[in-house]
Image (cartoon, rainbow, N blue to C red; front, top):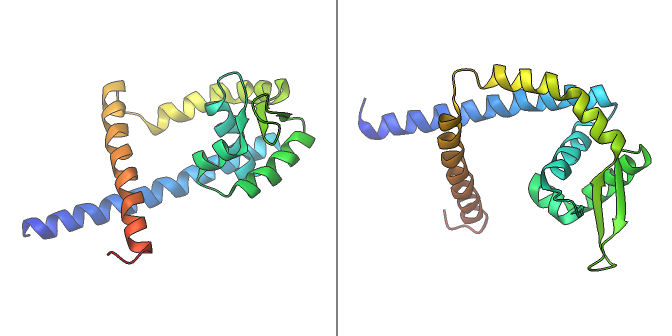
Length: 160
């Protein structure tokens, strides 16, 4: 097989592997969400807030950017999560027009309760990869994600 065809085959295989991984991760997120009695998008919002919060709360725009979803959807879902006592939403001390969100004790306790299962699941998913391999893989995936955004923009504006 010529080198160009091998490259195209490798790209196609990579894309299908990503599709498969995405599908499996969706199923996993649905399972975690069901354990808490929430939807998969709500689970992802909680995970994004947990990841982004450095003690001052997180803006809805920060969560929307992390998850690549519309800020209005984040607002709608976080109101529901607040009613369920998973989130606290308070006015930003820097700008009263914005809310800062953080996980409640209830949410933290629920996530902690799942942590043993999550570690076991991660161990299964990443079996055979050490820390250096994951670091290398993450650097490469970050580069591909950046290049994918650029390619998507080019396609949208008709450059490709």
